[in-house]
Image 1 (cartoon, rainbow, N blue to C red):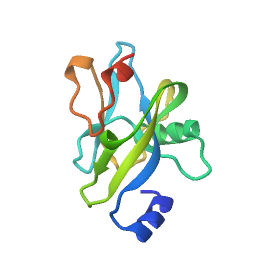
Image 2: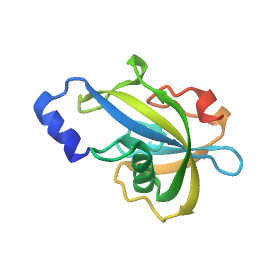
Image 3: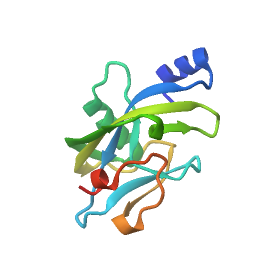
Image 4: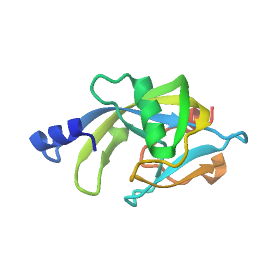
Amino acid sequence: MTSYVMGLRGLIGNRLLLLPSVAAVIHDHAGNLLLQERASGEGWSLPAGAIEPGETPQEAVIREVSEETGLVVLPASILGVFGGRDFRYVYPNGHQVEYVVTLFRCQVLKDGGAWQDAETRSLRYFARDEMPSLALPYPYSALFA
């Protein structure tokens, strides 16, 4: 959790927080989708995270992907912007969020090495018909466009 979000949590506690965020759609050469298994036991998700104050969404997705996967990416296009009740989530610690997510299709420029983020347990590419459940209901039409 960023210091900015931690500061807000200090003011509002577990109440609902609207959070501008980004997520990355990254495919391998066979069209499989990269997912991140969360170390917290929350399951699988896209590489994603909150936009920091003063940061553009493009900068945020580059930073988040690097931290969570070790990959250096170029955000190639916006696949959609998602939010609303379906994008509400309650973390195991009780923190409530409603994400407004800009979903980017990203091109891998290079493998920067291992991920740096303690949030990541593992990374894996999944075929469309092998996808695990995700915490947020991104439409498959956007994930496998």
